[in-house]
Every structure is written in structure tokens, then in C-alpha cells.
Image (cartoon, rainbow, N blue to C red; front, side, top):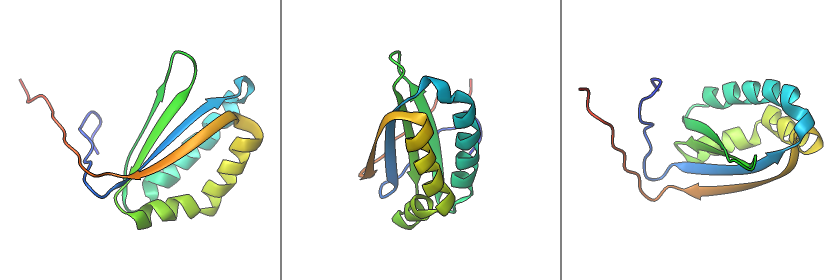
Length: 114
């Protein structure tokens, strides 16, 4: 996907919403692990998009989309991802929650070139 382009969301894709609050002392180690995990996720055939948002209170929301349940399962079950999840519980997070949903519809709009 080109930088700034509208992601290609579609009905049937799997969307994971990961909400979290990180520990204050975890930034450097977290950044290394997060960079490696994002690169691994992007390498999964069927990866669509990833975005993270930070609220004023420090809570974070990451949204990751895969094209198919199989692509999502490949990422979810990847041994390196599982190890990073455990590292997150041990070192990075005060708490987190995960919600996975199937997209039942998608629309997009983009300003035409002027």
C-alpha cells in the first residue's frame, strides 16, 4: 500500500482490535519487539493493514486487518508472535484486551487530486 493511500478494506476480512496500556519503563525494549512483529505481520500473505492510535490517557489501540481467517490464524499462531505476546505480559503491559471480528461491510472515500 502506498503511504497515504486508503487501505483496501473489504467484507469478510478479519479485524483485530488490540487495546493496551504499557508500563512506563518498557519503551526501548517494546519498540524493538514491535518493529520486528510488524515486519513479520506484513510478511504474512493476506496482511492488509496495521495502525496504532494513542489516547490522551496513554491507552493505545492497534487495529490489524488480514484478508482471510487463514491469514489471521497464521499470524496468531506464529511462534515468534506467541513469544512476543508472552514478553508483553512479562515486560511491556499493565493490561491489554483483544477483540477479533469479521468485517461485515466497508466503504472508503478519498479526495480526488486537485
